[in-house]
Amino acid sequence: MLNLNSSDSNSNSLSDPVSLNVGGEIYTTTLDTLTRYRDSMLGAMFTGQISTLRDKRGNVFIDRDGKIFRYILNFLRSSSLDLPDGFSEMRLLRREADFFQIRPLLDEIQRHVEAGALSLRDAPRRALLLVDVDCQVRVLHFNLRRAPENYELRTCSVRILTAEIFCTWRTFLVLLCERFSYRTTQGLTSPLPSDRRYNRLKLEWVPRPDELPQDQYEKQRYRGLVISDSWATQTHFGDLCDAITPSRSPCEVKDMHRFLEELLTVSLAEGFRVDSVTPDSMDVLNCHTLQLVR
Image 1 (tube, rainbow, N blue to C red):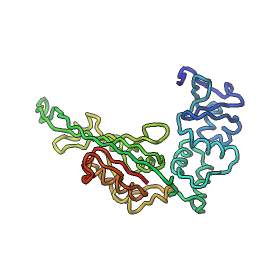
Image 2: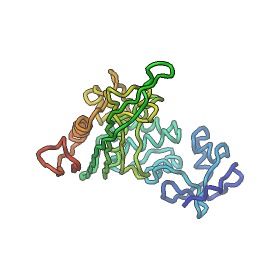
Image 3: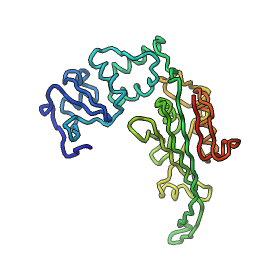
């Protein structure tokens, strides 16, 4: 449990060795290692430019993926990207390196990819994907402005769509986070895994009914879900370090059928197969629960 009242405002409160709690994983290292690249996020944290939090044991707490951090720490120590054979989480490693703004590490990842030293399609021999979907219909009452001081009471039905996803192959969830985006008043935003271990993802969105004006839709703080139609044909999972640049406008996910179609397209392309469907094994697109394995 974090002690949020305890923070370090400058580097003088830190001394060797430094104990880190990164997403529940404990590491011990030195200030020289953590500040090797001073223009990085870690460099800023451990030179006093950014305040740090401590947990109740006194470890500096960083709310990121703890298992992936070991490879980042090893790179800081040796300036070498030493990964095990069959490493299957390069996408996740790249995301963490980008968060910490360690440019030399990002460059090294790109060199490994271009040299073919690592296959970014490498994946665990076995993986489990569980998907629970739900649709709740609610009645919304709103005032439609006809003229100044002239309002008309309207009613419409809105569908709240929810998909809860669990996958033992964490990199696949990162792929889904890049495949789907929320459409909000601030623009498109990527969803984030629901836990620090990147095993769970929850998507919740509300397609806008035709009878609901855009301003009323935004007033309710609803958000839509979109995909890129051109992504599947233009970008392959082997090109994980390439930016996904759709050639057409994102396509809105207006119902659960469309979501499941896209999920199946992506998962089957990555080697999953349908293992079980509930309630009707012959009607995948109307399922409540879907299990896939690879």
